[in-house]
Length: 315
Image (cartoon, rainbow, N blue to C red; front, side, top):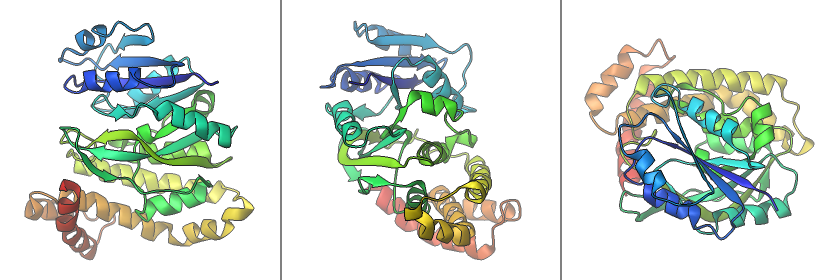
């Protein structure tokens, strides 16, 4: 049976105890926990030390990394991991008791893959259920995954995924983008490019949506810069990818529609930023429109979407 490494880059201590309790309470017990303290001013170490469990390994960064390059933290965790499989989770998220067990079942059904994925439950600060991420097929190829993701028919987080550690390292680790905005996407695309991805529709991961999550924070211009780099990666990938016979149609669709799909991602980024201070941020995007290849019409569409998005994400 496989050994897992559960990696937690830690900076906030508010939910860390709950996070660790959910990890240590797994029904499948062959795992280690790698906690990496990113120079937090909060009592992260004291919280970790309060758990007397030999499966926990605690490390500290010499300087804060995550504020600038979150993926550097992710990749250091992967480098420290000893397990055959690795997952990375936020210090405010939590696992269902059968998270690892569900993945072992998935691996037995689809052996030899480099990446596996689960459905997630989005929760609020009090742990109340807000919504489920969309369901997905039990197996899919990379082009299908990209197609569904860029059409915004999927929601996913870095912790939804379990990777074969050696394969992730061989691919260069988690893909670096500003604020890790889209890094989880491209990391998954690279991992499943050759063999595909298996998915379980059991919502065994709990993602906590709060004001400190990447989706909710500001730094809007950095997110849009990440979108530009995302688009460059996608163009290069499609130019060099040899599609499996089962994904040829969607591959050619992606080739034809990649610019439109990336524009939708830009509009989504703007809509997120305009959920509050809509007028001020509308003009911010207008001032930077040439830098990001935006038209006035694109900004207007995003502003219209912002109102509904704010209502949906708050419910």
